[in-house]
Image 1 (cartoon, rainbow over the protein chains, first blue to last red):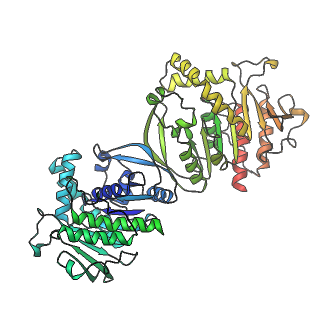
Image 2 (image 1 turned 180 degrees about the horizontal axis):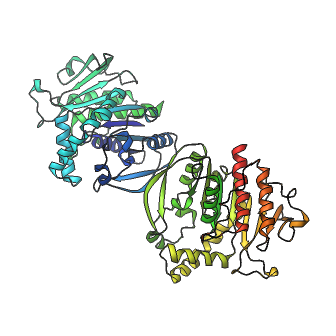
Image 3 (image 1 turned 90 degrees about the vertical axis):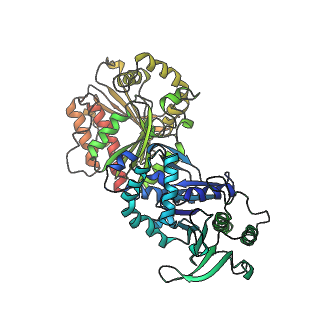
Length: 294
Length: 294
């Protein structure tokens, strides 16, 4: 089981969908923690806190359901319809070999975190996240652009207090962002910086990456925001795809996989492929498969 | 925790409401198993089985919720609206000191039965049950009389196969019915026959009932439908209320209760009081309080 948190529009659904596609829908599924909203969109508008506040969600029930699923039991999961903003009848969620628990608050509770093989936080820069969120909300969730801006402003205090604080609980922090020193902007394919904390067993990248990769994919030893040692993997958008594939194959080989790296990794919402996203997803697939083998 | 099963219109809600009123709404609550219907009324009409069939209900989830509540955990319970026949958003049900789990199939599963201090089946005669069901459905659930008759006929095979078979699992079987030998009819206050199986510790009625009570309240030694020994308590509608009160006080005293017998016992849907119902409910309160003291 993987926990995947990040603010609205940070890319959770895209990452999770790729993991399920790679592992197979018969063995893997996504559980969305946003289904545990206590209030529908209209009710929430009249309340002082936003949907990002733990009190606006059935956190204790979500914890219980994550625990039950982790123990191999089905649960009757509530449902929240993002398109209409309404709460519907619950549905049965069956346990699977691999589960991705994704949501605004997926890492906020110690009970849920205790069930995850890896806790992942998407630290998408605000400018990029706002752009992604706006694109999705206006095209898929029936928001007008001004509404979306108003909501982003209204959510900011809760995002600061409850969403971004989850970064501290992540074993892996993923930040998709352009690297200005390399002349990249938001309109280019994205580079990524991946913080790999030694709180879990990460793949041995030192053994894979050589000087030849350095310009494209680089591992540095650094410190996280608390001064604790961590690996930092830089995946540059300019990396030749042959090199990115080589690194991916190396990580995959460490799992003892004999088949090829799953082709479905790296698929963007638009349908095109990003080698950066593929490598990020592969690091998460690594955790899921490793946990299943343990 | 008490399990209370019986067919639609058998009197489950009336009995359960009186138990909660007697024990106090702060300490006791009802969990309705009918909330675990998989389908709304319109969907169910198009299916071969009726809502009485276990497959038409989330039995496994209901079992899980009963177990969680018994262990002191809250659950996110589905909801079924009997007035509109629709499934709504789920609600949190908190554990309580005393819980009455009532429903068409409350005794059908071994997992749920294992949580009950006592399993109770309402064996209301069909003629009486149809009358009660019709009164309620046309006044409270928006049915027309013909619809209700049609539904009763359609439900008969599932009622026979899944509802009435639960009688075998009950520690206490309650049958409200007129006693023709005493000139009683459905239009009189009702007598009751209560089968008390020795599968649980029942109150010592032998020590309470004397020859003086015999005409009004009588305990006989008999056999159940499988030939197994059981106590059979006859409470006649003609019992003078002073005698009924005396017996009730005797049962109550065996619980070590120093206060008076709760006044709320015996309240009918109409608001009037039935000493017969009060005595039946007291036998169930006895089980709940005894279990809490154990």
